[in-house]
Image (cartoon, rainbow, N blue to C red; front, side, top):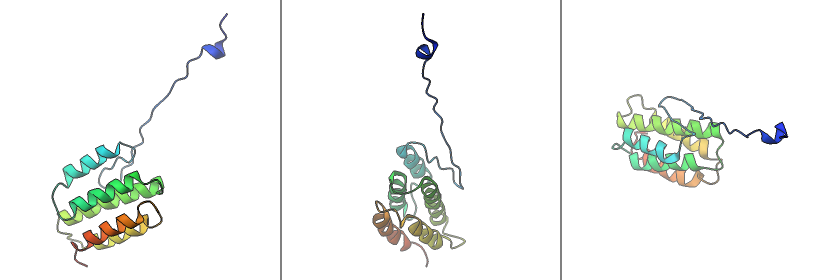
Length: 126
């Protein structure tokens, strides 16, 4: 006789959680996929290389909460869009400051992100 409790199989259910905000960003997708998608959308343009580095730091941070990571990734996308389009509404400096403030509490990325933001800030009219 087989005991029913020992014969049950454990079933693992996987679930992808997608978070949408402005530009579509899949926070729970592999970092390389998100970076690749970002590079495809913003291959050229002012600050593209620096923003890729910021996005990678944000997505790999162990000190940022998931909601902060999602917001920071969305801000990176918005800044890239602003810079690509010539910042018609002059929001890039404000968004860069929001991004800097958002990651300031993340000890593992605060300093490198601040340096990258400073480099990108030189590309925006302040």
